[in-house]
Figure 1 (cartoon, rainbow, N blue to C red):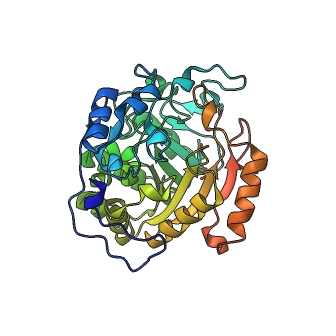
Figure 2 (spheres, helix red, strand yellow; figure 1 turned 90 degrees about the horizontal axis):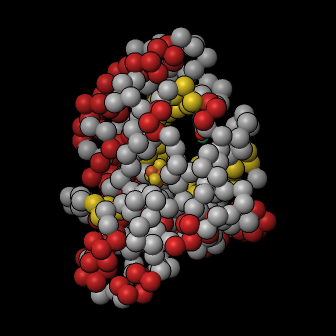
Length: 340
Ligand SMILES: *Cc1c(COP(=O)(O)O)cnc(C)c1O
Ligand code: SF4
């Protein structure tokens, strides 16, 4: 399939994404994934022997993301992010189910950790299940009451120190346009809210989520809109993702990217440089490069701090400052993300 999609070169800001309808549909089992692999000429026996067919955190990957896989082996940087590994069962000291200490900041669907900002857990659903996700063990049952955000908005309305509402999840773009519109309207009605931030990986992995209706909702709000997307590798930013990002930009949303530093995925200076350049070509600036949160099941993605720093220095030596992400870690109890 990927041969049918014309690729743009990293950094080629003038490349036009072709007009196309992005693919929809999602793969939810190892068997279905291996069928996709076979259909693309891959050695599915090699893949099967490198993965866990009954993971605790279910496999989930949109077809649009599968289209970005170049090399169907367990080492492919895109496949590695979604393929359940037998190493997820390793018990590693320091890796826990609440690695960033969120439970203590949880007020229903709201997370209040940092001054001036409140994060709303809008849904538990994601288009993709990223194997390294720090929310893979999050207590969503406690956070979500059937999409009723009234209590959350009452708390925000009562606290005039909150100026920014962050929609997170799960992925807020998995909500219907009607639910998103209700959320945006509730936020607009609170005079002290100035900024609406949307944290989404769907815009990258399932670009069909960025519809005209969504773009027009964002274009017409009084709130300043920031979309923080989540791409970890240049491979994720093909023409369909690029087109969805252009739609968001055209709606006047400011676009930033956060990535997670992942062993065997994006832990080289070359990978980070290619990602930053392609982000720029898509109208997105790098924001954070997160050190992995020590969530149980993800230890095999860890990159030691010392190596991360050396890698980032080499990125800094090659790129303009605005293309160098901030390398940060989330520490329980800290008043902001902590720079390394
Ligand atoms: C990361 C995070 C934010 C946003 O932090 P910024 O540094 O402003 O991007 C807000 N709330 C919570 C709970 C977070 O984890
Ligand atoms: S999209 Fe984000 S919240 Fe969802 S599984 Fe991936 S990293 Fe976690």
